[in-house]
Image (cartoon, rainbow, N blue to C red):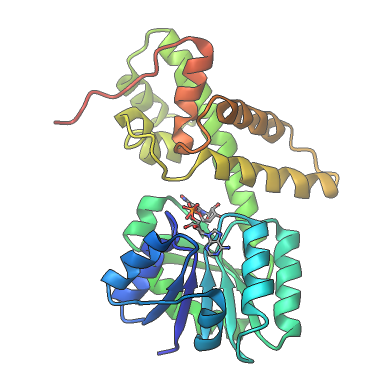
Length: 299
Ligand code: NAD
């Protein structure tokens, strides 16, 4: 098996690296926060003292970091100067596609390979090894990373050459996050009408209003009283910004998305930035002076 490096052991990276380790890929991992590394060491993984150490000792290095400043710093300053030629750098973070292009070019110029493999679905899917990957890679690099992606996920889409994965991800999250805000407003209106929330989501899930938030996310998160992330509103706000910035530079209007981003900004300004994106419902109820609805508890 190739030697695997893993940098960024947060809400997503930790379970993803854990699944690699459990399924027989020896990992050498690093995070600025030692908590994440400790979880991997418990499973038999090795802890690195620096990004340079990960770069020197790995055949394939995975990164799962918040946004493009962290990816730029880790890859350009840490991995590129220290990795052996032929090392494959696989960035799974959700970042600005232009930053992906810049990082990919620097990686390739140094004689290394680059793959973008951002992740769809929710953090609970990452826990269960059920991620969905949108991969941008040459055919050869795609074949090289596929066994590891299969250890972390169940659905792997090869979207095109390097850069195509992150572009697909920006498109995916644009709809997923704008739709989350629309669901939050919808359930706020229903609550203000005094409608029963369980009946409301049952009905909406049986018409063309049906969507993944109401079916799989809201019922187990915000409507069950759990607003810990999951996927933070701060990160969702970043992702809508990625879509809006790209679209703006290409003269593509995203009218609903621009409104949705400012709604997320409102939620952040009221202290919800670190909460799960389904907590847009609580933020909206708060703004509207409506009591946030909850499903009856199952026990
Ligand atoms: P997170 O904030 O929980 O984790 C990020 C980790 O990176 C943290 O542990 C942090 O300490 C570490 N880090 C930051 N700077 C570093 C550096 N310079 N060197 C080493 N480590 C560093 O975020 P997350 O929820 O795990 O998300 C990671 C990425 O995946 C983001 O781009 C996010 O948009 C995307 N994503 C998240 C979800 C989700 O549901 N949470 C789903 C799909 C994609």
